[in-house]
Length: 161
Image 1 (cartoon, rainbow, N blue to C red):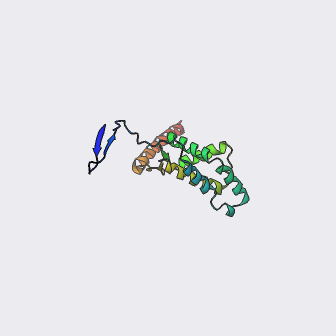
Image 2: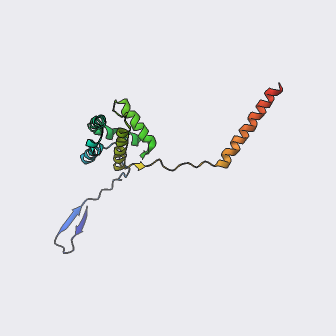
Image 3: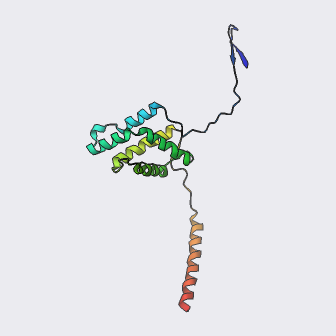
């Protein structure tokens, strides 16, 4: 225990120090607060009255499953090292379609992806596809030329026979 005295010495406060190591890694499986889920549901149906009736029905169906959406996002983040990019978006859509979610329309898909990205960001994900690997064109060209020379030798050997 550590005693801390106020400047006027009228009050002494005792506090315990916890020597436990604090894990700063985001917990992608921890359920998001209700406010996040409510905001996600609201974002799905934002300006719903301006959408076609079929889109309205699809979005309302998905809004009712916003907790499932949040869980799927957490699972994907955990499995992909906390990254959220186009690969993870495609995976989410495939999983949701397997579960029978109405995602045939582009407007519905884009809203779900937008909301999913927001949830992923709130969960602490690294947003984006990450650094692109640069290909050394000189090395790649040299490998292709070498294989072409080898292929030409194989072709010329079969023509001589």
